[in-house]
Amino acid sequence: MIRWCCYCQRYLGELAPFDDPRITHSICEGCDARLARDEPLVQQTEGERVLVDRLLAAARTRDWPACQAALSDASALGIRDDSLLIGLLQPTLYQVGLDWQGGKMSVAAEHLLTSWIERVFSSLPLATGVPPLDLLLFQTPGNSHSLGPLFACHTLAARGFSVEAVVPAVPVEEMVSLAQRLRPRFIGFSCALPQAVAAANALVGTLQAALEPDLHCRYVLSGFAFRLGGSAEPPKVSHGAEVILDLELFAKILARR
Image 1 (tube, one colour):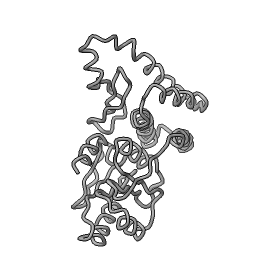
Image 2 (tube, rainbow, N blue to C red):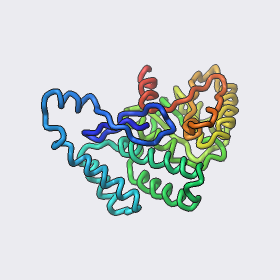
Image 3 (cartoon, helix red, strand yellow):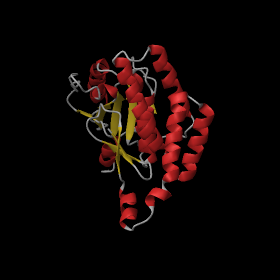
Image 4 (cartoon, rainbow, N blue to C red):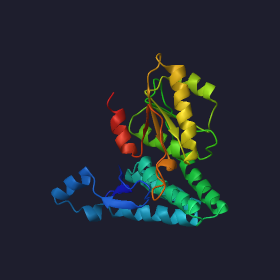
């Protein structure tokens, strides 16, 4: 579930169950301190709540001008891009994936909504990673869903980390070359579907053999494949790889330099 401050409308992270895309309202430390000082927080944050409602309404109707206006107002109010991406667009994508998996959404409808979200994402600036990188993020072969790794890249970059997402998928020889040049602390793989995890496991083994001991880094896997929940068995990852579900938690790991 998405943790969201019900006052200032900021993304606070995620919590289990990770296959539930709904928002659970909480309160951030800043707003909690302001409430303790008896500040009239409800009145002061009404603009943020109205703006979030506007953005969700624009998403439902795919109203691009209304979306652009809401994004501009969000920037003026100081709402970070990662809050909009991870707190609003990511739950929408999760729900799309669940609906498609359950046969509740046609392929055409899924493509239309995904293209709208891609358009929103392309309107936001994306920082370029500077080597040595904290994280070099790849897609697994056959994975055509590029928004997940781009979302992760944007969110971590907004927190001051040097991150590069390489999409779409590239041959393993190019992965090795990029890792040697950019020297990341972590190499990650985005796995949209469970069958992509086996490919990621194989790639982790290949990269370990090609890069170590000259470059010793950690390997992380993430994506919708690990969020299916229900009766689905969690995909098994290879030795030396870790599964990341919460970007806020991963940011804390990255901060331990």
